[in-house]
Length: 525
Image 1: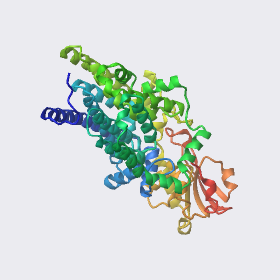
Image 2: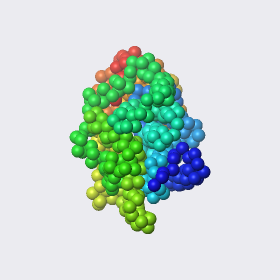
Image 3: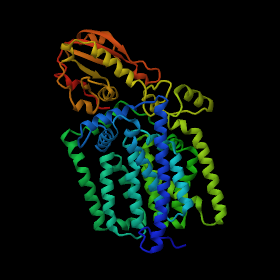
């Protein structure tokens, strides 16, 4: 069979591309509607802002070319979301939802560009839509949902080049790679895997031209501002990563468990889609020119296992395997009616099972119902970090207790005399607490913390004469540093993270100047 060229030179090719674009756009809109609807409903039943969202929003107030624990694009995303939508949860999460829709769109186009028909596109995009990791990741403000947009943009463009498009398209890959690095440093590992995937296959010939060199130059140019920021701030991200390793912040698992986690997080039955796609890339004659996609994945998988990465670090790379899986299941040996029945049966099973496990991806059940539901079906969640999350998993628990905390801090602040209000400071144990106070609080002083970028923003000239302190310390421990202290409030929301059950102290007369000792509060983790 003669496959249409992705560069769409003839009238037939342009018509085929138009239909592929329209079909992919329909599924992208379905994905967007799913994410917006889920956010609306979860907000309605009581789930609030996610911890990291507060942090990114405050980072958006301090736009810079770098941050201790993330690249600058998520701060820009947060800044734009707040400017456009205010404090609306749907609005704040809109860009992540849109990025998820783009992921589905690119999956459909990759399937078409590999030579797939409508059935291949359909199955590939459906598999991406029902994957729990994408539903969850696209449901809150973060940089994670944007990763696939940049990674799969590179894959799609490279497929076009491999199919005969002008090597000038390498410049687009350079732009996507550079922007991807400004979104998240993980782009580096993807690019290394991609180049390796090309080098070990005959498609290495695609690298030997000036346009590839131009792509490298563009990537470096776009990533340079963040690199210079890292240098000028003494490589804080490397310190952050090293501290995580030293303190064993993340749960480490062996290769076997790591593979099982990949299967689970993408929807257990989806392994028959992306797994078939991986096999198809290596054994199908139709995939002869695309073996590099499979080798890219295998190298990236090995790299993440060697570095003890979290299971979701691989999530952005799977759409290309889902696209290949669509072609594997579409096949060519069966009559068209048989293919339709086969794809329909697979789709039905995926949709039904996805509906059953949907509450594990998005908090669409109130906490008590969620607990009963998961216990009845023996559904479990795994911990990514070595912290107690309480009755709910961390991804859900981190949406509770923030407004209650801010209300208590506000009550304490309003109880102060005008003289004390003029000099009081608020110190928080972590960026979630500080971010929540700065975003949700009204007329409160700027909350400070020693964690990550809050440390770089400094102590705001607080002396410690009057301080509101959120900490898990005991009253005796606080009184060692202050002339007087009292427990003025408590954080004890039953569904919040276990370590967020803290005291709120009102302390006076710090024995050493708070600002002078600021360096001691530094905590990159």
